[in-house]
Image (spheres, rainbow, N blue to C red):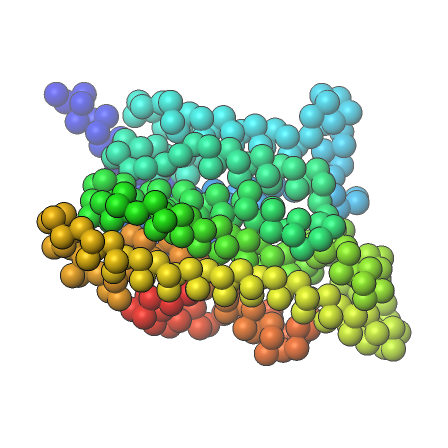
Length: 371
């Protein structure tokens, strides 16, 4: 009995430390996810934090593309001696860690806070699907080996393989039987409703990818010597990759040349952002359709007592567990609005300022059921 109590205490200490570490990481490096976690039902909140931290950690993996960087030199040396890069080893670490999450049911410390929280979610019978994690890893790894996009549709495909996978994970998590069974009943009554909910997650994922590549343009150009916007649009507006890299890295001093490049870049950013905005609009239209479908499903199933009882509490006909996963669209929406306000000029200083509207906008949108 005493030994069991010690093990239980040790496991609770692991969980406490994991929650603290992941929360600190997100608060520092992904404040949007940290704030949005407050809208996730408490039983699933730690797992949501872990999913968002997983995204953050994988996006930190550097393919060694920046010439002369320490990571590039280390990766080259390792590739030469072992036939694998540092990025390969990091992806293997995360792939193995995720596999252990789904296979190791002991109280043994997994050594990674994200893994600890995900395993605890599984032990508490919350829905998590390993295939979404591995699809995310596979897509991100492919991107590091082929770090450019020929078209904006290629960015959308990347978004489907990354951000949409995270959205599917969150949807499945919140539709765990222990959280809100009536919402599961609702979806089981309507395959069309299931399809619409999944489509919204897909649109949001693709919009997130496109807006993230615009937002990350200067980062990729300056730290990894990469161009993250569509090559075909750059060709359309006669903007070379070399000029884009040189202006972001501060190597061009001629004011007329700078002005010319910035004008061309504005056009590229505008046409790229249109796609992100179109996906947001599609998600909103489908969300309105979902609200209508829910009303129809509830009306057409009068004998489902659980559905009839709980649907009366759903704000604007949308249960929390269906709506809150869509709130990850809000940061992208705010960024696109700011980008438009400043004429799609990614060098405008106000685009580098922290987004102070997120807390208020997320609060308002939660109650109004908007994204």
